Image 1 (spheres, rainbow, N blue to C red):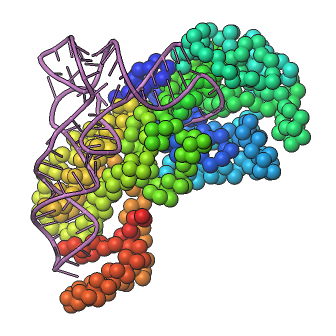
Image 2 (image 1 turned 90 degrees about the vertical axis):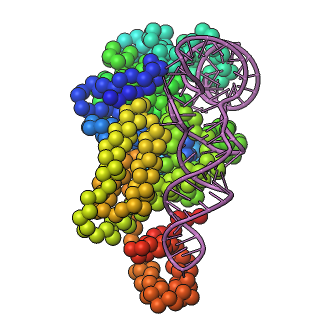
Image 3 (image 1 turned 60 degrees about the vertical axis):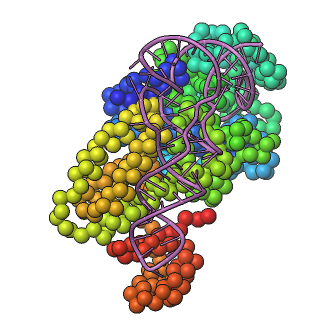
Length: 473
RNA sequence: GCCAAGAUGGCGGAGCGGCUACGCAAUCGCCUGCAGAGCGAUACCAUUCCGGUUCGAAUCCGGAUCUUGGCUCCA
């Protein structure tokens, strides 16, 4: 039974999709104006984990993730870069997808762009005006918060008691209420000059940020969807506003379960440019490898802050390597296992289904990947232990299939065992084996060095040498 | 001002009602021609503080202290 923590109720709830067996998920995607950092990817990975878990549990899942390719920052920075908005955002959209691949994040069903859905936004704005929930002022359209009594139900913010910060929209536009937010913004002369504008009943405009998600989510799934994900920082105002727009227009519940990912911090502090502690994904992947980064994210529950540091990353890497090593050893043993018909180890075989139950229960408990990893580690321990004791093919196969099942759900070790060993290395290994047979240790050791220089390591085993690519660093 | 989260061994860091993981560092053993790599094991053996609930709490509740975060663009 899957339980998911819902930000709307602040409780773990038994998950039940609107449509039996099918789950609709909308995820807030990137604003493509610079290299996404590892914190962004932590949230994207959380969504990936949710998708994979749901699929593992037998649901058909449809994920839609938006790409914000028009907003203040994209407009500002494309101008600074001296290129068109589209060229600029295309570049960072490509980077975003590269990052997904680095982390082995599965592609969503669709990635709608804000710029491709402006018609829908104008339509939604029109509808909200009709309902008295929005108004036009100086060519911009604003949402009227006072018309939506549920405003604040997601963030639970008590608007009477909080500071209205000095910066509460010191927009040059006048609004009825300082918290009213823009649905459509009147184009500036500069935007018009650059062709970044759309015709609307209220003149030339460009879309606001909040309205795009309402439109793209409802275009994809209709008025009500099962799950909406995003970072905790989006709870207010972004998601609060999405609810106001969507439910204001349709009168139906917009999202059943809101799932928010906690932030990644760096050595106890928030990532910020001023502290110089913002890490982009390629930087970190370069250092530790994509799978280690994925593992690192999985090792902390998504609702807890992840405190990134060198020590933490090293730790994750070690833990990851142990798990991977066990898989390598298993695959090697399987390759070399004979067909002897010994009965195999019943104790090992019997422990497997129980482990799978624990593994599934961990993920069913609000996508608890750290707990699932603990179970995975136990499987790896059992596997290693068995390799010391016996090499029965049937047992190995069984253990291997569980290992693969776990790793697939977690999105790990996708390419393990599939790397091709270069011919040159294979030849050197053969030469070394010949030398070893002749007890020519000098030659053998020299060859091992040579192989190492090529980036491959050898493990001498009873069955023969196991060659694999050395981990970088 | 208002709100929230967190405090775990030598270190990193999971667990979130009953053995405490796991990794690093240390020690021993296995494997090996040896080394690396790999595997097993040992030891140390911690849960910020004060109360409460419970047969039993790191885990639930209250309070204190400290730390961080949000209330404004933000994953």
